[in-house]
Structures are given as structure tokens and as C-alpha cells.
Image (tube, rainbow, N blue to C red):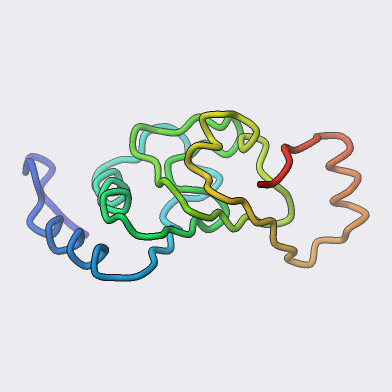
Length: 130
């Protein structure tokens, strides 16, 4: 997606909103665990369009715009219906602010050795899943 940063509303935005509203489900995998701070243009507009679409949204690993470590959501953060996260909940999921954008959290097994996961969880307790 390319757009002129000075354009108040990029020409592609209304088309994106219409397509998101016409679908039955949105899958968010825009940003991952390494992102922090406010999503930059144009991702901030895409995230806002996802939220405005009014469709069920599944976030992969965590909602885009949410800081996985501290649980602080950016101004533009996907408001997920469900979050499919891997191995264990992220430490930031424990905050009230994070819970407001996570929806129902589902922890998926991806084959990590259970004994290793349990040892790490004992050292770094995670929040309960919803």
C-alpha cells in the first residue's frame, strides 16, 4: 500500500473499509511481538479500518498495536474477538488494558518441548487464558 503521507484520507482507504465490511471474518497478522509504540502510516489506518469494519477479528499471536511485553495498546490497536497465541500467553496479556483488545485468548501448541515450557513458566508466570 502506497499513499502520499500528506493526503488526509488515502484514496485506497474507502475501498479497504468496504472490503473489510463485506467479509465475514478478519485475520490480523500485521504486526508481531517485536513491534512497540504507535503503528506508523499506513498501518495505523489499516488497523483503524479493521476496527471500524464491525467484523469478528482473529489476531494471530497478538493484536497488532499491542506491546507483547508490557501490555500497553497503541492508539491504533486491533480490537480482536479472539487471539490465537503460541506456546503460552505473552507477559503483557496480564494487564487490564491488554485484556480489552485481546478478546478470548487461545494458546496453541506448536511443538515446543513441554518440560521446557513448564520450566520457563515457573520462572516467569503468565496470566491465565480467557
